[in-house]
Image 1 (cartoon, rainbow, N blue to C red):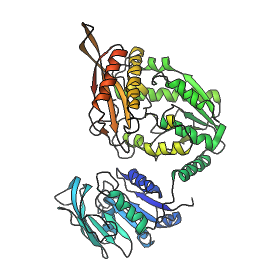
Image 2: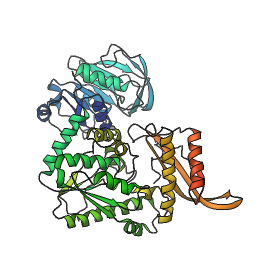
Image 3: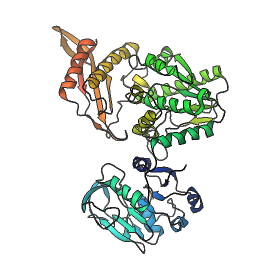
Image 4: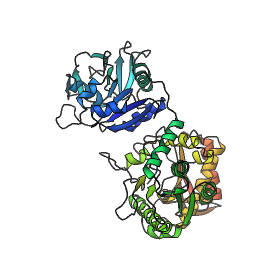
Length: 510
């Protein structure tokens, strides 16, 4: 690649991919690589700067992950974040301790405005801390550039070697002016030009896919959602008719969605196959009420369908998937806890006859996927389609999934989404949908007693889908949607609005 490059060395922190996303947001290309890279390997990559990520280890522990000490002799600017800052201090002769007072969450900090990272910022800021250890003695050549009530060196720098350390996390939204600090490092310290765009990234992905696939055939599960649609467009440009898109209509789609998907992709330069498997999926879900079991059953059935279709096609080498980074995090990649399983994460089962998986979106967040889709020329109604989980309406229909309940939910969800769009809120609310609860309640309609379902409406705003706040939808919009649903959809007599953020909840109910 001809553009400038920043290397992010991964030490196991929860925000590592978010760091990479912030760098790309600023127009600088970056890649996340393991901390085990040697100095020679780093030099061969030719980065203009290096970022050490956070991590959950203790820098002075013998078994904690370390950077090759020779990296510090390469003359490349380095920014250490949280554990990365502690590691830098430890390896360069400073001291790291575990104090009696830890700092987590929003923390008041005092900055030294003379620091190049903080130039133009007010001394008093609020940052996001997440640490147990801290630096209590600076390495030779470093000076402290920020402190908090309990952390004497919340930031440090050695300008002669262009080494900088931040105990807090500038990449998260909770840190005031965090993006400005990262911009200072990238542009003022590293000399970045901001020469990376989604156009260049899309070309890199196309090249990457071609190298991985070669002359092999690829099978893609095309759901018609944003992620799989972008993958289809990308692979179509990369390998053309080597791609076969299997659209599995599992009977769990939103209203009219199956026909829309077929119409959008059947004319493109790829092989399109539609499999109507609704009865098959519903049969497998009969009697199942546990959310995790639903997800696993649907995921397993997807694999079976793909395997069957692949045998019909013959000699399919790769399975393509629209996995994005939040899927990986929530499925418990690495040391992360399993929040909910995603059917497209975790590799191929032993009995699936594919050589490998093609996942070009694996390091992208949802907004980046949309930007890529626009770059690839996908129509707006696909790029901005509401996010839809792989298991479909099965996890928005609480309890056992049945065709009559799905029909109710489809109509109610369609009305809700239609009213959101009419109000001009479809871009500002990042995800919104209806959930058919398994609870019935007493109501009165036409002077008669009813005992029908309660429908929940959900809406969230988010920048990365890893955290989310409930959307403050105007009451008049909610009122209009609720009135229409009760009047137009049978078997619903009560509607509630979910005001839970993520965390503690997830965006989906199941």
